[in-house]
Structure formats: structure tokens, C-alpha cells
Length: 239
Image (cartoon, rainbow, N blue to C red; front, top):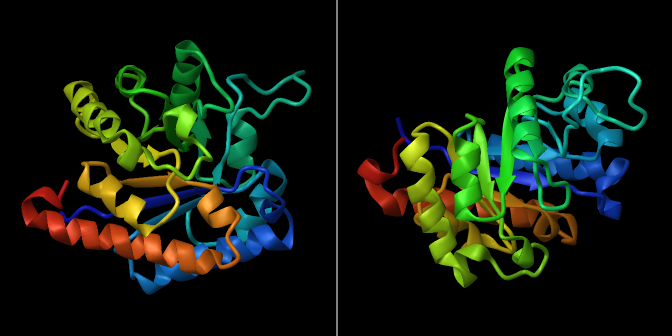
């Protein structure tokens, strides 16, 4: 089966991530997805306030940006996985460098997500952390050196060895988990490089959310990743 590259857009809390703008960017992502007829998967992760609106308005997967490792109950301000499920999301991001968790908390969330039928995308700051997380059996692992997040300097350019080492270490423990590249992904060239280095796609944020033409950025990244799959050929381009 030919590998399908994945583009995950973390809306974070930019002003464009709220209200009508959030829905507009979500629809732009869905438009690109439909134009590629399934040859690219696109996931959007809006703030909690926009989660239900986007989940009910879009066909593409909508993820929460974070989940708290708690059960429902008297926990003011907490977002348990059950709340994410009820809002209509299909999964959530966990352990982003801006919302770090302990390994035991990550394990709790992964196990709870499996019970609820939610997908998990767990972030890691370095190859060794990525490998440790992969043992916990998440659906996806995104490698994001925190010092490069928001800089516009992609890890695939600045530290390609972080990506290749992550892939190598993760595959020693988990052959199935989907591996993504994050941190500093600012354009199509970065997205293409990430796939050529052995990952299945990218986790992006500011490149899309701060752009005056989000659709154009999403489209160019999708095209670049498809191009990378074609360069890899049938043997390396399949999973």
C-alpha cells in the first residue's frame, strides 16, 4: 500500500484560531484534502472553544490540542479525553513542548484514548524521548526540538540527524507508529524534506496560522509531500 503523507495543523491560540477565522482555515484545509482525492491526509487541531464547531462542520479529522490525564470529575479547568470525544473530535495532541507531560501521564492518555476510540499524536523533544513514547503505542509521534519551534528554521534543515535518528530508534520498538516531523516547518521545501528523511509528514502551526493565504500554504505543503513520496519510489514510498 502506498504511503499517504500527513499534514497536521496545530491552530494553537493565534488570533486566527478563533471564531470564523478558525472555521475558514479548517475549510481551506478540507478543500486541499478533497482536491488531492485521498493522496494526502490533513488533520486540524483548533482550540477547545472551536472544537465542536469544526468537528461538526468538516469531514477531515479534527483533533484537540491537548488532553489532561484525568478522569471526569471535580477538576476545574481540566479537559479529560471523554470531553474531547463528546465534542466530536477524533483524537488529540499530547506532550507538546508547550504542554509537557510525564511518561506515566502519556500512558494514561494513550490507554484511555484506545478505550474511547480516539487517536493520539504524542510529541517528543528528542529521539530518545520519541523512542520511549513509541513503546507506549500511540498512533503518531511527532519529533519537535523545542528550540526550533516558531523560529521558521525547520528541524529537517537545521538538525536532519534528529529526524533520521528518531526514525531509527522508534523503529526498534514500534514498527507501526506514524512518525511526523515538527518544529520550524515554514514551507513546502521543509515538508518535502521531512518525508524524504523518512517520516510520514509534518506538524505545522505558524506557517499556516500567520499566513495571509492559508490555503496556498497548505496546498503547497501537500504537493511537496506527494512529490517526496514519488521521489522515494514504490519500495520506499510504501508502508
